[in-house]
Length: 148
Image (cartoon, rainbow, N blue to C red; front, side, top):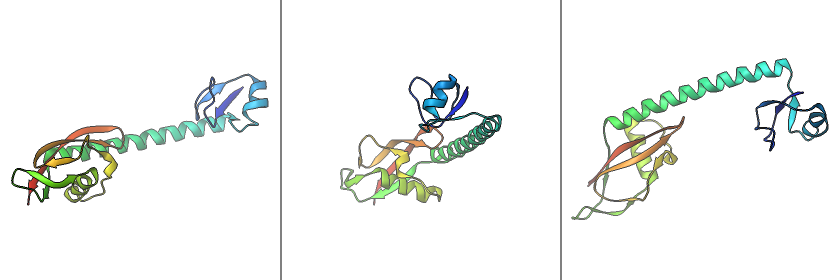
């Protein structure tokens, strides 16, 4: 019997997959427990259509993220902070502060979770910062920290 898995089932497959299992296993265990439904032709076609839409949506998101990364890599993100004479800043620059500076630069929303800092920035100068954008797009941008 062909079934569509609603949840991950060890030894059978992951949620959303269409699998061929024995009739008794499907009727007596998978379907009553709500782990699967019988895969009719209409259900299979609907699932294929949904997968195509999801792929298109993911591709569009990836392209937008690549364009955004290109904008960010074109010029450095400048941040002005209070600092001492030797270039040591008062406090430290966090992912939220970098995200806010990027948001002001590109004039659109930018989530702080997209910025990856191994440790907070504590000195003036040029720093390379990793970003991980939606759609699996990753890259490095330049953050220029200047004293006020």
